[in-house]
Image 1 (cartoon, one colour):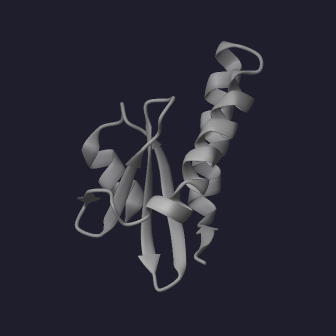
Image 2 (image 1 turned 45 degrees about the vertical axis):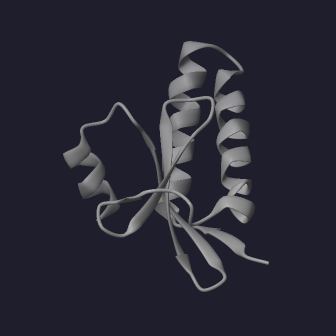
Length: 98
């Protein structure tokens, strides 16, 4: 079975998303975090089926929020590199991933 690992940047992205939504409505940050983590857990089954962006990252679009999960597969490890708001400028996303 594949394992899922997070970069520190990915943890930071999820935390930023939590606080962004929590400021808008109490409890929405927790819902965001739970939803994103469910999408990430689904990668145990669906990793590798998503389109590749920026030449080396798979991109899974989150189901409930306008965010995407950028990951790579290294043997039996699914490594999450970033969790990014899709409304960001694509050049900013590219820089964030590199």
